[in-house]
Image 1 (cartoon, rainbow, N blue to C red):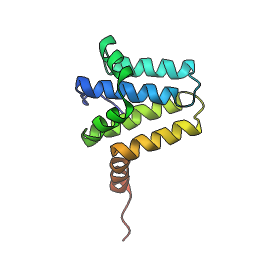
Image 2 (image 1 turned 90 degrees about the vertical axis):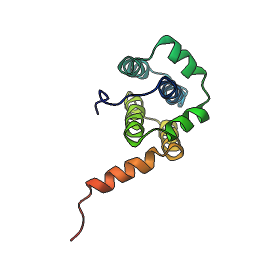
Image 3 (image 1 turned 135 degrees about the vertical axis):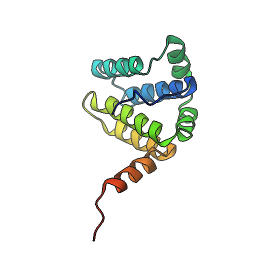
Image 4 (image 1 turned 90 degrees about the horizontal axis):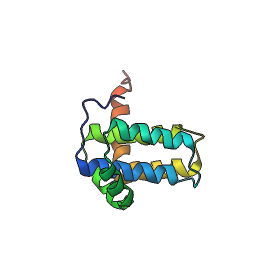
Length: 124
């Protein structure tokens, strides 16, 4: 999924940083693969040191609320970024639980479901 055409405000980027950090820390074992992937994502999104510091201190509940107000394309992209963290190493149950919780509370799940229903062939 390309993010070239997807743009975020500074506040939205800070929220993404918060959620990525939460995802990396979710299974209490931070791997080099997760750190590498999160660094790549930070580079792709052009996260500055200041944005990172604000995002690191941002309350996760507030970050989820920010994502909830994003447009559908942004929400799908945030979901994709979080799955990249999950896939960086051996996925754990806590990562999946957190991902599901973020998706449910932010509305990412509704967007994903809507996208899936558009791609599902209709029965004749």
